[in-house]
Length: 109
Image (cartoon, rainbow, N blue to C red; front, side, top):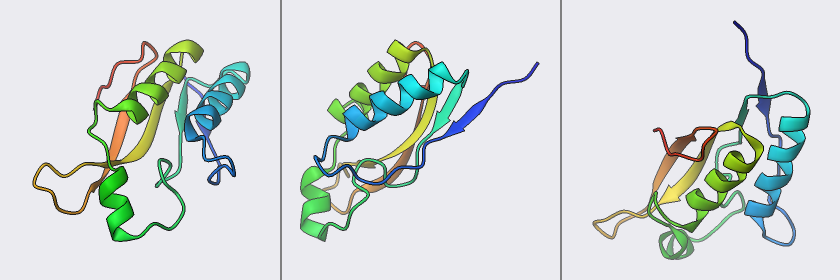
């Protein structure tokens, strides 16, 4: 049994809408027969940010960024691996967290 992995080669969109970019990649990957799409590291904020900006923009794993990517994968019927800046509960620097969502939009890891 085989499966097809798609690697999303992306830069940060000029409009700043990473979720729209995820939806576009998901639709293109699904049309190409991909079952798992892998986004680059720093997909959430791939441009340079100051430390203060990183802390301010970090989200929990159940926040809007992960929910948005998970919804895009659910709509396309794909699994995905992507990274996000996870809020540090102790208030320090955020974590660079890899997230895995399944084709039903559930966070698996």
